Length: 144
Image (cartoon, rainbow, N blue to C red; front, side, top):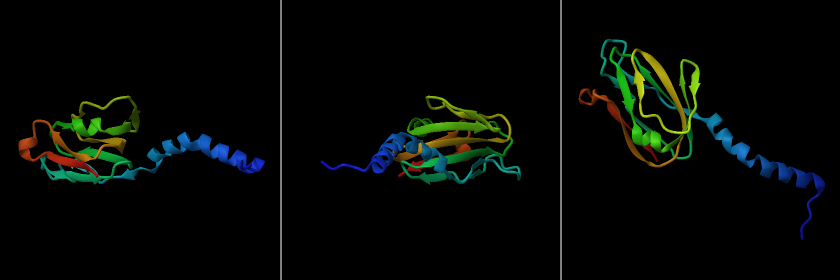
């Protein structure tokens, strides 16, 4: 039987005990994705910037969805929201935490909503500004 010196044993015990805490740090090392922008400042309410975004499973991200146009935008991505671990949603420096995915995110006026999450299940997930799909307001979030 191998015996550890007292200091090494304590160090190993501390590392094992810290395991779950170290796992929580994943969200602190998140990557900022390019902003997904709905509408623009030049009067094109149906322009979309960065409509197709690729992510890696197991990594933490922050996605800012920014409404710049004059439309009401209802951002739907139900399958994507279902297959991520949602850390928080941030609106005007106010955080929303919860145990389940949102149904959709709605913009009644220009502004931004940041979604902080860990990508879990690989796949290609469609998002759409409900009711404006025919105007080109749809895209994909692909998790590899």
